[in-house]
Length: 616
Ligand code: F6R
Image 1: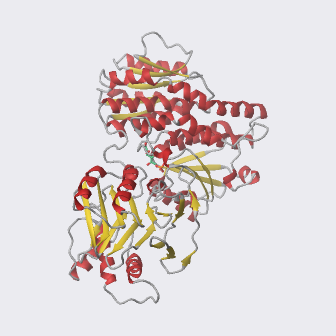
Image 2: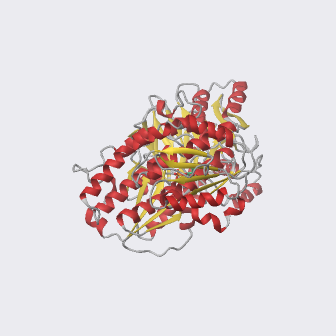
Image 3: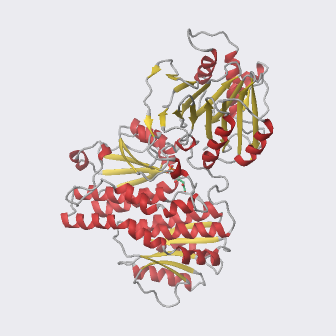
């Protein structure tokens, strides 16, 4: 949520910043802006709307400076206007600041600053922060050896309640940026005679692969050739420089029309990456190097608690189903945003899991911290390497799905499902699952990427179905058991990218209310896998058909539906129960994608949304 890029080096900053913002636009796209240091002052260009608007505006300024900060916004305080766009300049024009997060005590600070004569042009909490830095900058320095600029930022942050990732310029300190974080991600890219600050690796990986992941409560002071990190309490921090393992090409769209399309088609590879090196030599179970728990620890666990948000929460529901089904260990699933405020009782033999693509979702992070405070050991299934969640968890499983840029999660989601299936196997094999069932399960997992490739071959058929169904404004997604969460996911995908009202329901529950919605104008997407409840699903479909509802059925190949029952059929390959959720997800991703394209929606940047929700 909100993207930050700062640059200091020997090149013109503006083009590097705008390139970075383009790569970060998926984090927020309400407005964008840059502040450049030049000729002893700070000049700002900012515009409501997309980064392309900003690029046109910035071109008028003929910026030449080699140090600057920039921002792409997802509005929290204040509407989407030019004035509310970041960067904000202090009343005295000395300080420019960009911010990701929320200053909770901004009102009290603003009243204090108004009394001191500071003026405000926007409705944002960020402008309050900017003027507070300016206020502290006018004060006497008290810290020996520290630049006044750095000291002013530090003193400001002592007074801030809430969350922030910030980057700051001061007109009296050319070629310097001060940046800090608490609760919002911030990364330093260490380059050759240049350094970059960004809220996401994708903004800087085209210039350097050497990065320092800043921690909460750290402040970094950056020049072109140097940087130093301290804590808010002025303790020196020895930086750890990590290497980013993915290249810029993997964050580019290539020949695809949208990142979402690209990422749907990358799923087979993402699944292969999730499995690489993670099976035992005897081929009967999964191995996870990063869990930091031994087999005895695992056998002592009598309950798992899974917490997440959005699609990742749907992955938790699948994990619940698979772990209970195969390992027979009870699982509880909670929304991270609820768990963090609900005083859930602690069970010392429980293991707490969070699932997060970004590793930065603020509610999931808060749930993780609350669980740790309560004494749980916390594991994370996470795609964001070096992310806050990955670092704060006691152990975990990296997804290795590569960067996911489309706002609607696709490849990260199916990779979470597969890892959940692997984890269920791991726990099951420590308990009652036999060696031969384990081998069968492992073989099924290994077959999944190819089955996903086969399912993707349905894309042309699904595109045609999408053309016929894009006109409807209400959809139901219905599935049972492990496909109920996929019904929720299908409904979420459709509503978030095409703005169609859609609901996911357990298929048999439909008759307890949602059936009232059924009419010729409300189609249902039904998951109808082979298995013991096949006939029950057919009965639910009959109930819909009797009320003139249209049906798109996602059916296991070889299963015969009564003639005329489904209006459209999308076949999926027969597969193991553990990998069915992965396979069944692919058609609903494609259906949502093609419907959104058909309706002319901005698939990769749906309205009001942003990738990585770093505010509460
Ligand atoms: C939906 C979607 C979101 C995320 C949710 C959690 O397509 O992408 O619902 O799943 O915001 O995000 P992460 O996984 O980054 O914690």
